[in-house]
Image 1 (cartoon, rainbow, N blue to C red):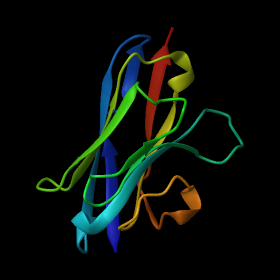
Image 2 (cartoon, one colour):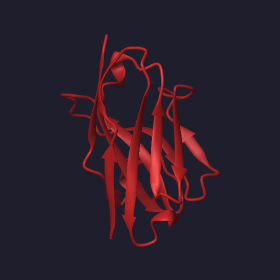
Image 3 (spheres, rainbow, N blue to C red):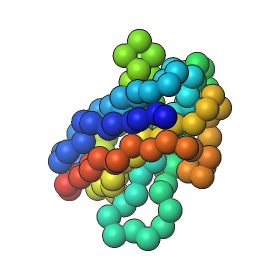
Length: 125
């Protein structure tokens, strides 16, 4: 079993930066690919892909909406995944979820087996 716990969310102003953290614990936490997804408030759509990274950290993918604005990284000593968000906009307001799956990165929420509880990020304009 793998457990993920997000932290670092909150209320910020447009243009600010924020770094989310996701601590991964359980069996072999460093051998998992990780990703961030988000769901906007009141949205009935599926969770939106944001960024993903394979277990070595050598492969990353970003959605077009955040490319150049967000950066995913991982520290396998601390078993922690980060999402550095810069130049935040009101449309970045959402609940952000950390997810994990075995080895390979993926942009599909359905591919991930483990999820955090989500953390709110609110950007005021």
